[in-house]
View (tube, rainbow, N blue to C red):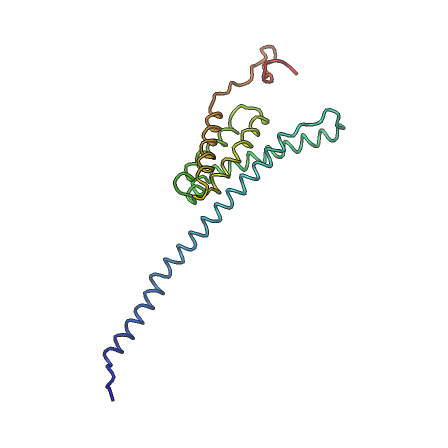
Length: 198
């Protein structure tokens, strides 16, 4: 009857205990931290895409024309709704820009560059002296290429590159200097674009 190699058994047992402890106290915390990091990045990516869609909805409300033949109450309600959506859009843009680093961290390479480019651009748009209608047009136009970039995959490289080019083109358009409306010298008030009183 063969004898048992107790040294081998002891060594195997000690190795099993060591591996278990190493996994439990060294590898497992690192894996848990990585898992949390991945989940946080996924949440940030979802939040940014949702925020861009919400900005687009608010911009769309600002682009709605008030019918000339609408009752006064309807016109007033629409004006109030547009004012509310402009404030909502501005507040959301400020919040996104303040957290630009967190959102950009969730992406790499070209997508990270696009996030910074987009967030800096929309912040500049709402700070500019453009009319609210023009600001809304710009925010609205930036949404499609930006979401296309964020949702882009290697399976559609041409669409991804086209969206990057379109975003860069739209951002360049926003960087054209905008002159503030002229001032009526008789009253000191700003005139609408075109320089005439309405």
